[in-house]
Length: 334
Image (cartoon, rainbow, N blue to C red):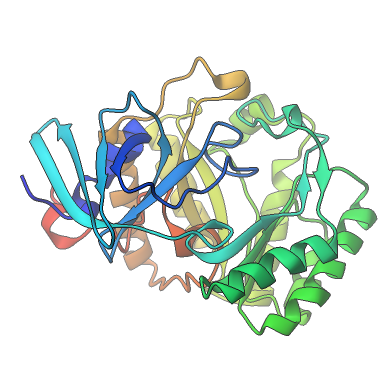
């Protein structure tokens, strides 16, 4: 079967890896944020509309045959053999077409699904961030800048560090998105500084699950910051990652999606990559990923959202099934 990437991407996300043969591809180094953090290098495959990020694994059932300007991805899906024509993408910083940089590579919190606290701590200086972005700009590989961070110091120290870097990146004249642990009033400060969108992560579909997975953090404060951000940034510019596969029911996930959208927040449904304290968990199945993303698509339409997708995870969409891009008319009924 010859298919589009969007129509089979839920299967690829459930597998999570690929083996590449032919010409050595441009790789994204082991990540310091997001799925696959600290696990290994990854490759980005695209058909020009959809994109998927897959961790490099010589034993993977997914094969990418990479040529000079094109590539073919093949694997055995439940519906039979699949072949998708496309290409392996160049990487700006962390992902294609953007400089997505983690300021604090380390964290004082110990969320059970996250490897960050186990990694060697490193705090990028403004000089270091500016240099990384300059290199990516020279290669003509980026369209935006995205900043994320773990939590290492006090609230004041974190804000000072972030705004020192924002002052440096202004000169590039590119849209900037920010995803950090929020503090009261931060949204207005970021907006006044020219940030175009924010992503503060609720992580779980339910309060009780958050308490179990993220000890020491307060989910209600994140909700308050997100609602504040909607008042400041307006509709279509405020996002929140929700991890799929932490033990929530599908009904809980649907309630969370609807509540977020009622509040003006766009959920980004992130399939769990089992690691850290949840290494024994299983990844969500392809069907689970598809059903939840299809529901999100229908709710985005019902509430009249048109996500800006200027920066961060929604611009890349390599780790998630993007409801408005990957779920096309031909697969909606699956």
